[in-house]
Amino acid sequence: MDKEQLAEKATEALRPFETANLMNTIQNLTLKQIFTHPAFLIIVTAVFFFGVVKRSKTVLLTLFTLLGLIVIARFAMPAPGEELSMKSMLPFIGGGLVIGGVIIYFSLIKSD
Image (tube, rainbow, N blue to C red; front, top):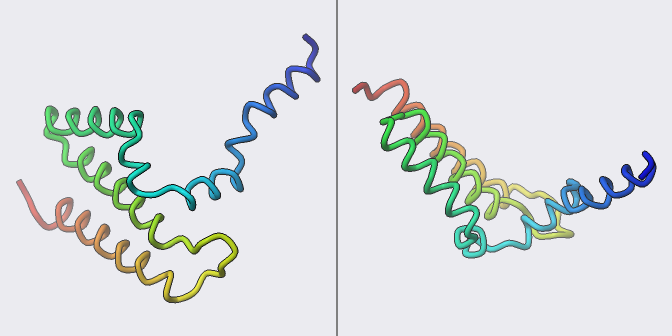
């Protein structure tokens, strides 16, 4: 197998991970599909148990942030073909403030 064939196979294998394809997939996913995917559930459960066993506030806050960003991205992204408007930005702004407030509270204000 020469370099050109290898490059073509790699290009075809990575094509689903192009930004346009990923954004299209994310926009068409529902929260139910995301939160019921077995790989997602296994990863989240493993990280959660690691954070609880190690009593790591950083791991648990990171997990909270990632889950929050998934929910925010689902509600804040406009449908395909629509432009970004202030109405679609409100959930992103509000969710970002909530996530930021929780992180600041637990990491800076509340002490053990």
